[in-house]
Length: 384
Ligand SMILES: *Cc1c(COP(=O)(O)O)cnc(C)c1O
Image 1 (tube, rainbow, N blue to C red):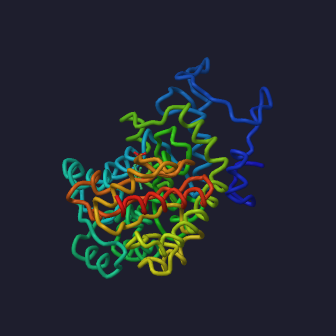
Image 2 (cartoon, rainbow, N blue to C red):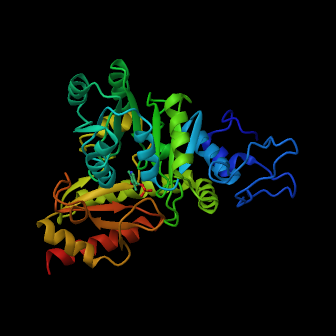
Image 3 (cartoon, helix red, strand yellow):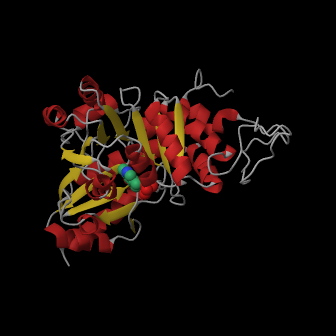
């Protein structure tokens, strides 16, 4: 194999970490490069392309080229967190207006509302599942950037990437997509017309709940991209080499993990629809989900995140989360262990998250075990 993304599929490229063999030992597993400094040539040049560890690390670059291959991207950059990736992309823009999804990862929404204005940006939160609302907001605001999270936390709201890219581009705006929940396995935002794709690599990309990392990938290495790279190096928003190495190890099994997790989520969601203690199941794979048709068109799988609304309201929801044994009551998502979380108590009053909602991150356990545990917790919470 070589480093070009074709003819091999992304799954093949990721499984072999692009198939690179370390030339000195012939090691099949990529080595971990930890050096912060590199030998200079006698004439003072740095022909290796590596000078200092903040901008230059081979393990980080190797992991970046796998992310780029998975996204069909021209280039990718890794960051010390998903939040660092997202905020670098925004801080690299000239001050202006931004339109962003109303339903999105709460900490980024909160940053956009509270912190972005301090950097000269004004942010308008819009229901990006409604194309008329996006069109009206783009006409009104003349934004430089439209930022969409799809499926959007924690209602799994689906936004139509191709349609929003067309609206944004017609108005001279760029489109960035937080594709953390979709993963590159199920959605290819750049192929659908997005300019930038962002991941919290802390979630599915690493996949084992043991690394905090972020990624950006682009279709075109333009001025915005150079500015993002410069800000990362200057602000030190970098990923450490060991974290990049763990990310690379996670990426090798991404495809098989997320397909299995997604199949389990679909099976569990279908059973929960029939459950007497569940008022509603939010999962884009269910025909009744408002985003189902768009999801079916732009995703090749519906992902492994679902939410339920528990009959009996907030107290019953919290009691259900208290009664599980196998599911772990914890924040985050995308790991091999299944997590359950009452989101409204985390997100606070500005959140669009209803108080009776429990968010489910479906892991790699057997779906029958996961369903049985949730079923008994739901029943226990209805009859305390
Ligand atoms: C976790 C998450 C983030 C933030 O990423 P960190 O790695 O925690 O900084 C952003 N967007 C989504 C959708 C997430 O789930």
